[in-house]
Length: 126
Image 1 (tube, rainbow, N blue to C red):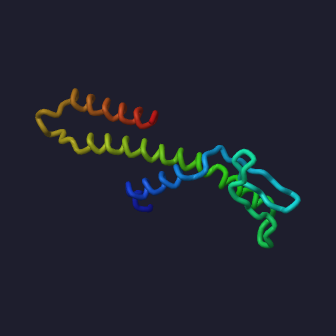
Image 2 (image 1 turned 120 degrees about the vertical axis):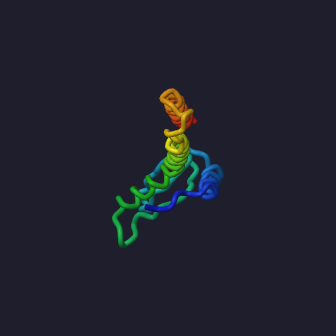
């Protein structure tokens, strides 16, 4: 397992995503020059050469689709990281509670669980 992403690393990823050409991006296949283009509307963002000796034209199209979907995929993954971190923090607070504490009872556990579910829902809607 890899180490968790730092807040700084997530901030870097968000900044690159925000600075990228706004989408949506799509793939345009140019059979004349054996290339796949990732475009925004009619404006090209990048060309993926598909006639390299070591791969098929289909591989170039597959690579172009990956690039074209990267901004949406990254935004979805960043949102999922945020949601999972909120759930993790709420769960950690529940686990950290001392059930042997006289003030910690079933009602308190219920309130903590409700808070965890609320945090999860809020993060899910963010």
